[in-house]
Length: 113
Image 1 (cartoon, helix red, strand yellow):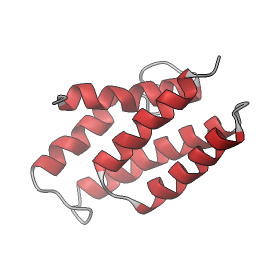
Image 2 (tube, helix red, strand yellow):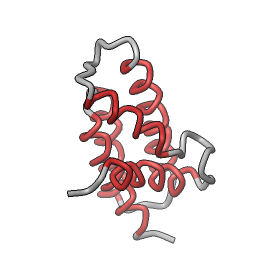
Image 3 (cartoon, one colour):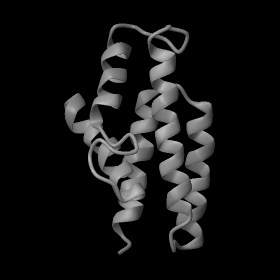
Image 4 (spheres, helix red, strand yellow):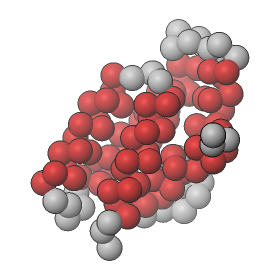
């Protein structure tokens, strides 16, 4: 079983790869996701006044990473995957779903360049 820190590295690496940025830029810092996971473990819900603004911020960072990814020279299937991810990001408040998108998105982008 992966630790929370290990899981959140996918978040940071996905944003860095998509946005071509360094740690700390464009939301590429695993601490954003790590804080969400810690809040969730304390039974925070989407309506929690601390959880909601944080997950909205993470969703914004991930959405922008997906938008930038679509602008890359991707295959039609990979481009469609990022459009699907955008819809999922918009609808979910589940950290695990977002982390899954990060892992899949990173896998796609690593096939290019």
